[in-house]
Length: 284
Image 1 (cartoon, rainbow, N blue to C red):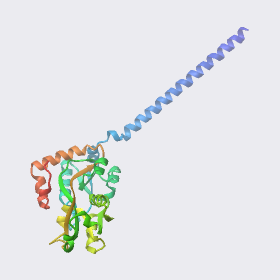
Image 2: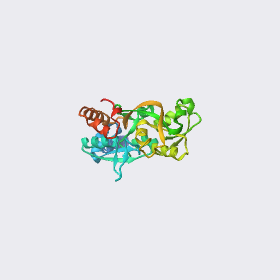
Image 3: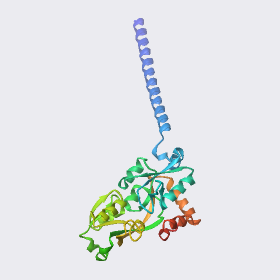
Image 4: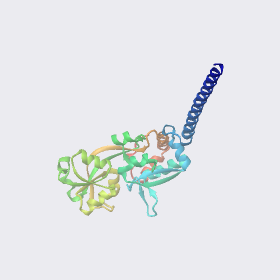
């Protein structure tokens, strides 16, 4: 009887030790898993902790999304990007200690390009529309503009109000304020890849008119330009330009401070005068 009792007690002790050993092992495994997760987070970082300023300084470049849009962003005979926005972007990059890189994008995809980090900012005479300001973090306005109707000069006097535009076919840049103006006014339009292409459509006669930025119209149509038979007609909407960054970007404050500094020391006005838009600059 005593032998049976001793065997039972021994078996119980073995079971108890085995169970305790299993519990400790499980706890240790859980602890190791948690440690591995922390290490992974430390290596990859999280989006909440990202700094755009640190990101561009690490890669050494500020990548700017643009289109061919004189006088804001366009290429000279050597293929270098120039214009008011291009010159200001180059100076801003220099102030941050990085190089500037211009990437020509489909303007309709600018938000996707930003979020995927193909570009670091959209800086191309960008109108501060509700869609833009809800999808990006934007700077203060730095330039006034408007959307205007461009059409052959010899018929411009026939189109002085929105009602008279109803029978015209328009070319507009996809994703632009010009496209929004055409849509808002119920006009018949075709979307093309750039404002420059919209002007070509009118010049070729495949569209009756275009809706583009006033600043571009002043530089691109009329006497002494490549489109001397075209003219800027009625204004559809007034607007302001800003620069767009990814949501939460700390580069917005950096650029607002840069704008204020360059407006105060006259640099912004000097560059604007170089491209004939000094009257449109917004005080910073």
